[in-house]
Image (tube, rainbow over the protein chains, first blue to last red):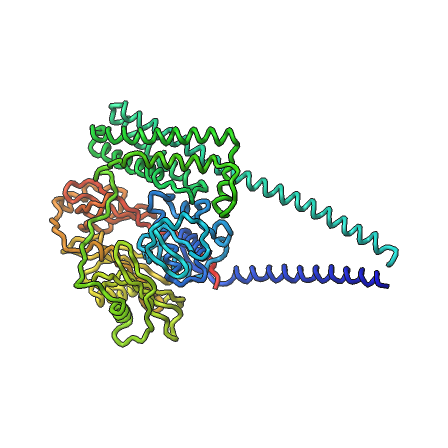
Length: 159
Length: 454
């Protein structure tokens, strides 16, 4: 009697696990569907690429903090020590966490698109910063040797 | 049930084990194949970098041994192209956390010098001068050093089968122990050698300068309290009720207070205003808003921008550029001195086309460079100018303008705006000699529909 109890227990748990995973996967699927149909914006490709980077790098930051991150990318394009195009700077291997961990590949919020537009048009709250990092999570000791010129939200900006 | 229970469970278990095994092995294979593809891209960038460096030093030497101006122009164009390609190669390598500023600056210098010399060679129709040759010789010596270090490193990387993907992983995850430091050490050594070379004096012909900055002096440094008051009144007028706070103090080229006006009940977001500590001028300002469908057209939007500018003391401004995306427009204005447009002293304004509200102001160049200049009327008259303009250009406007060239030097020009097919251009002709100083493409970039999340 005891043994058959065990079997039915195992059988039940397998079914439960299967049902849960189907439900979870189904929900996840429908969520992506909703996100895709949300709302739209009109932009040039470079603005949209930058807004995706800003969304991935500065989620939760104020509009100011988001423009600042965009400005760092724009400043890098002009700096001799970085690639010469916006695309080169954004996709430089290892340069941005959002590219490495895939956050870049999500849809940006409309705030990030407006921030990208401002940064490309020349708004720069950092006054020429080419680096930024979050002091709470930064792992590289090397970045601290740069000259800090602004602190905006969670990020430190430096030249 | 009792009879079949145990064998059935065992079969299911074995089946599960087998499936997991197969799945795991496939995942492993997929990962390996992905890693090999990444590695091959890095290898390509790295070996191409070495190859481009070799071409650069070879072409620089060729410049010195040749005495023909046609050969010089060809070599300079090659050097310029190779330097650009080498920079792109470095940008494709996972070296973001290896300090390479000297080496990268050197490549960029080579690009700048070859471009400037190429321009001069074609304009003056003469081969490089004696002092140019000394500069080229200096560049050759350093590029030779760089080339040797790189090709030696390349042979070591080949010999030891060193992996670039490992460098990338080590850069991404702190604390990963590298088994093979060949690549990182090689680049560090190369950079160290570059640091030991004496600084090359490029001279003012080749150095990218910023236009001369205006010296701003206030009576005394602004206090945070004063900055907050100025910020509030500047955007919202005397009776404003925003809560104000200082977010940061900027220590860049202009010392500033970053003031934040916290949102009122009916506003979505804060307003940010950056104020110079030197004299209380607003350098830039911005806020974010979700826009409703546009009810204004561009010329109405420009009127709102002009009114805003006048109210804040920017008079005699002329619109030189309009960028529209959705219902947000960015206008660029420059001041006029007499009839002459002062391109270096720009101001940008963002206007929401749903209400005419100003969402952004950017006046850094105006603040840094604007002053009354001593300017002479163009020597070349407009009719003469018209004769030399290409027949392909459909001329729209001709007006006198002061511009700053690539090297930061201010030049008096005639600005000719026009179009060819779908493209729009602003061409700047030297107002005295008539030579083409600069051509700027002002075709608006193509806009597409994109998704955004709420």
